[in-house]
Amino acid sequence: MSELKSYQETLDYMYAKLPMFQRIGSAAYKDNLDNTIALCKRLNNPEHKFKSIHIAGTNGKGSTSHMLASILQAAGLKVGLYTSPHLKDFRERIKINGQPIPQQYIVDFINVHKAFFEELQPSFFEMTVGLAFDYFATQKVDIAVIEVGLGGRLDSTNVVTPEISIITNISFDHVTLLGNTLEKIAREKAGIIKPHVPVIIGETQTATATVFIEKAKEQPASLLFADRIYTAHGAQQKWEGEKLYLVTDIEKEGTLIYKNLQSELLGFYQLKNIPTVIAAVEQLNKKGYQLTEAVVRKGIKQVVETTGLLGRWQMLSQKPLIIADTGHNEAGIKEVLAQLQVTPYEQLHIVIGMVNDKDISAVLELLPKQAIYYFCKANIPRALPVEELQIAAKEKGLTGNRYETVALALQAAKNKATSSDLILIGGSTFTVAEVV
Image (tube, rainbow, N blue to C red):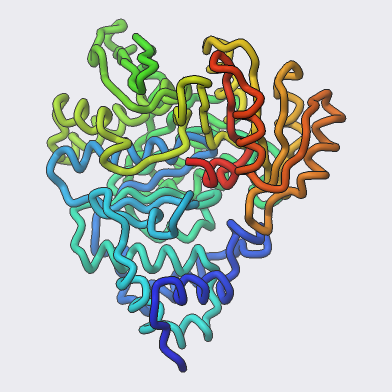
């Protein structure tokens, strides 16, 4: 069997040979963990060789994962971070202390196991999880923050037994695979809850709280709802790229526990993620970690610098104000729109591209009709054809021109916008990936 020589050749092989959800959608989704278990066995079960934190949820799991990784790193630990999808380079998915996995490690890994892969035929995601776990075990990380890819119960990452489990929230996304009610989706996410592993739920939701409570009792696992213990408020917005947060303890009659917590993460939705992170820190400290207030402050302040997190209400320019945000489902778009309402601008321009396996109707229904739209198509097979997007948007009263690429759409928006306007780029992670 011919050996792969370069990183690019290896990537081409992975994309061509392994079914990839990012590119082709549900055809790449496996409804069991058999391949992952077989792959981990082949790799001498690396998932047992490092401590971990396991994070699921519809929205917020990326920001939460990165903040926790940054805090743990600020405490002087060697921290693995596994996330998906990537925005620019595949190596973003697998990092240690903010540094992407070396290209040569990937080339060598694929070459060593290539014959086995061709026999097993794992998905792209299954292979990537195996690669990440192998790398974290080989490099002897102190702890790894592992973000669930899709769902939870059947996700390839669900072979770890973590220090704590976190489920940020539940909303409608991937309904064809996870279920068409919040309760069904919650049951899939609750599949990461394991015996005697504390679980934190970020957001109390009437439709899903009982699902988590029952699952935790069944395991058994201790459970807490972060938003019943802590609440966060935005204290000050600094347009040069920093925000201050206040965190109070509800159980202690609103006692202020963090004043002026500095962060480069400007999105309103971080008000939901920060209490989840603080609750996780408390649970980790009960397990013997020493995550002091100074460590938490440093980790949250430096999260973008430390971990390379991109695309969360990310400011690309000030005049005009250009914002990129990866919010792409109903709940994510609602958060983005709430922030738009308190952001000053004269005219709103929206550069939007979507994927073909989402309920785009529900998202388009929410978008402001007074905005000028620039419809486009990200450069992936799953991207919704721009003609279909424009027609669907027109039915919801949204008007604008279509462009063959994201870059052309953004350039058109820049040409039209004045210095006091706002350009929002979003609709899909993959649209944002082409501009950040």
